[in-house]
Image (cartoon, rainbow, N blue to C red):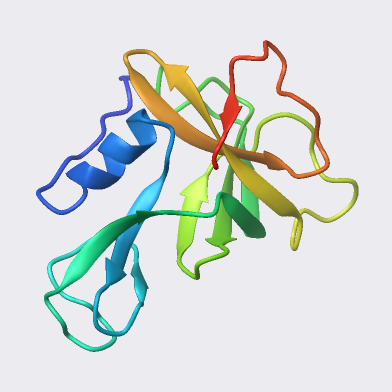
Length: 143
């Protein structure tokens, strides 16, 4: 078993830098305003090469979820949940739900991004909007 490794490329380095600064940002097409995830060299909608990095609202909705009961990485002990969330700006990203779990179905639950240090790097996660501060109080919400 090993540690999870972040794969950095030319296109997503600014995204990881924004997460480190606790301001999750994604590429926005300068021509058609499409928000791009994953980051890349051209807009998949209009094929423009022009893009800017802009912070996200920090709000999202859970589309799907799974709880892993087997440990795949040393830094993610089971049980560990993964959620696919659609951010308010449109793209779907995978994250981790921390804090309270939804009552009943997780699908459609509104969440907000939070940040926490895991080892030497900052990670994003999500928590329910109705939740109070995450235990320990060190997590901060996105703007």
